[in-house]
Image 1 (cartoon, chains in turn blue, orange, cyan, purple):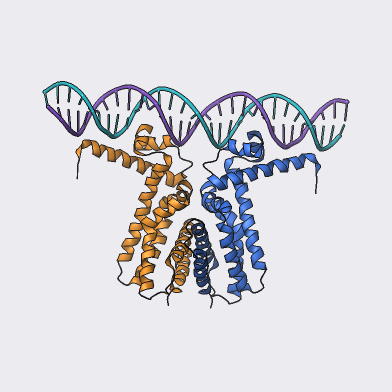
Image 2 (image 1 turned 180 degrees about the horizontal axis):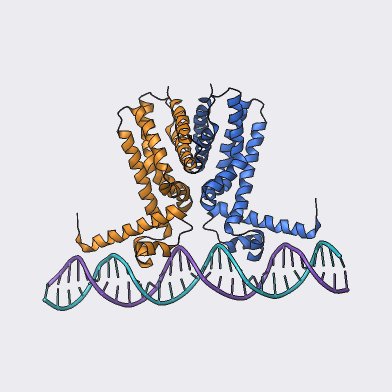
Length: 196
Length: 196
DNA sequence: CCCTTTCGCATACCATCGGTATGCGAAAGA
DNA sequence: TCTTTCGCATACCGATGGTATGCGAAAGGG
């Protein structure tokens, strides 16, 4: 599988360069304010290369978003798996998500431009596959174990996911002192209220 | 103040026509997919008129967003003021918000394109002024009265506001049967958990 | 009542942007 | 070595957001 000729290697290299360049620019100035000319210049290729790898600008953004979301999802999963108790896994995962999503290099792409560029449905589906899945699984496990009240899980997932997304955006821009601690405390109380 | 000459009246009329036309198109197909040519055609004016009233496309969108947000804020305030008990005011306001924000003619403008077009900070500031203010006031009142635990209010406002925004988006597109009721129930439990 | 000024808006124009068509050179296969 | 494939560069196009200019009618002053 490794090193299937110099051709495939170069291909992947330019693709990565494009995604990397686009990600940096999108994160800094937003999808709408970045032109394709700028992206290909930063990646040191041409528009021909871009359109050889991606169908259009939104498709390139999709690749960037996918990368960011899987980074965050992986980070959350890693933090959660460090614990054995299902309840601690949930709270640790939530706290890790708050931290991961507050990173300004991810926030704009993942939480602001994502839904607008790809449409909310597609954005939601990608988020579900990359990270919200973990939240749903954790809640289901806890409900089945009787730790939290038995109830429909999807509404809970959306309420909590939306709460954390908005909180992350707020924490990144308007930080009264101790806001992070206060928010984690409030979120913790909300989660604890689910327990039977 | 009324009828300050035919000139001011015509001015307001064209401005309204532009906002109205833009709102319809933005709601239906999204900010990015609608061109200025289309907007001015629908409003039966020209680009000259548009740029006489608004600085640019984003500025026109801001006027549309402002209108939508104040509609929702007014609707929420009205529903809340119908009750005297502060706690009931909160829950009624939240339920009304969920209903108002689920309207597809408002949703895309208010919750998806808004943050992306104007930037999250400005969007947040506008939302705060138009509707989230009511949530903050209700929570502050309840905290001071000792109905809910004394705690920092801003984190709570953002968590709850984000939760309701995401829930509204979800309810508008992926409606398993009874999803609205389940969501309102889950939200109600979250709110109730704040009580002392 | 006329003359001047203001101003709301239409027309014409421009730069830039996303997107496409075509061609070339080097790697892969026979 | 000859042919085919393919990754990408070059050149080009229509459309879009934005600007500069001009005009006609309403407002204001004498």
